[in-house]
Length: 442
Ligand SMILES: [Mn+2]
Image (cartoon, rainbow, N blue to C red; front, side):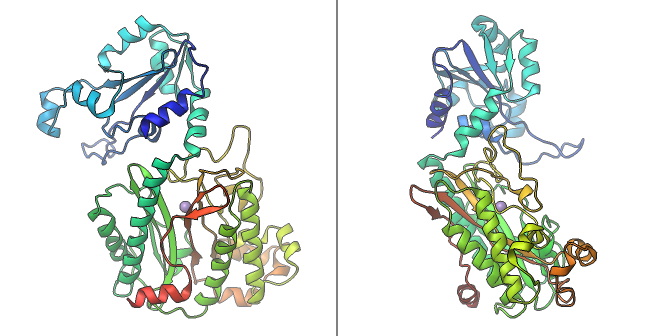
């Protein structure tokens, strides 16, 4: 897989150009200035090109002769005492198959002997290191080249993404079932993580959201520490990571296991929005058009419930949807949860409420992996000012909406691979009310 990835990157450069690619892998992070270490997770570009999961490695790819070289940290016996191992260079040569391995203190020698015209790197920090060696560093090309490579997934990458989605999906079902007997949100999180971690998946691709009741309308609620109100509903937005590749799934369900109003009616609106946008996903379609469609479905649904009134087109015109669905419809998914490549160079976010948070403004192509995640929220911080705003006010049924101010929100999120003719949905968690009730009933 990583050999394929390196080849893909090499192919973007003029062969035989007198140039190198130079990347630094991740280092261990500490909590403030203490010796507490966060568990190490490799930097995604480095992971993509090497598969090395240890800190303090570096990579040189030589465009001239299409070779690659792994740069090892110099580790002493003290490291072996504290960390339990010091592998010999041969271990890395055999495991990862580079054309050569060298130690970091040999880097200067290698650079001066090779003395290329250009070295492509990712950022200013690395560029400074290179300039220290009297080399010409280029920071413009490589980020874009890697984003281009990473935005279309290979079959091997898709396999990891499928497994991540499968296990995260199982964890969602387990957590749903645990919610009924749980007193606090973190108990549901613990049930979720018990499943991912016992499958050996020790990294979270993002801080999961385990939100009950009104907290489900807090878009980045990560405290996950409040008591679950009786008869409330619950929103779980959580994934897992397989060989660095992420799943990112959201489900919303009643804690009791039985859908009742107002949850049922509002839920069906979001369900319709996700079903219709998913079925519209195929090569040639723009993410922003899918989002606009979801916005229409949501407004139409709210109108059906008498929560808003007027012509849908007029509501679209004033972006009324963004009061209820203020975030983007989805994003690329891969080694990062919000994966690279969502915007091509020169493309800016749409300057429109809601849509400006769309993280992938691309025309879909085969091999892209995206999330689709429409939501519907009752957010007092948005609705209170809207009740007083002369543009929004005429469309809102204030008395009905006021009754829902403490309701919270609903989001449903699946992970899709774009295929030749449409999509493959990797997310194996039920979405319909009936199926969720069945699953929760055991
Ligand atoms: Mn997401």
